Length: 178
Image (cartoon, rainbow, N blue to C red; front, side, top):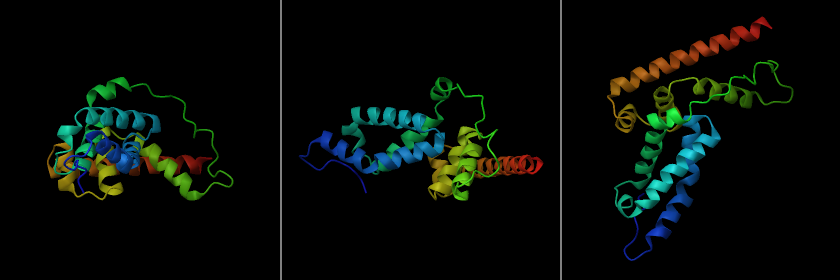
């Protein structure tokens, strides 16, 4: 589905309709990439501001949704953004948490642990896993989005999964020591 403006329609309302239709999906995608809600909002807001200024040109793209998703991915992978968001908290809030929180759903705990592990991956590896497992994209599509070969995508995925397995083993051994 393209969100191109219909002839004679107001381009601003077409952009508004696009944002209303795809904004939450873009934010979810950015949130999975960044593992930080506020940073995800910043990325989506920056991308939509640039897209809004160039809407007359962007709305003529074959797949506007794919174009904007790629812009979000590029903004996430941008070296400028990584430099501007290099500040990271040093305290680990899970450090003093019991192995099992009373009343907590195991699925929520596992999701929280997975997001923490994803956050420790390099941005490109995280992007590959998010695109592959959350958005069911094939390696060819991921390679086109990131701008590399399919074999490089597979290599990033293999390294990321190996890192996640290592982190999982580390968490398991920490839990068994208590």
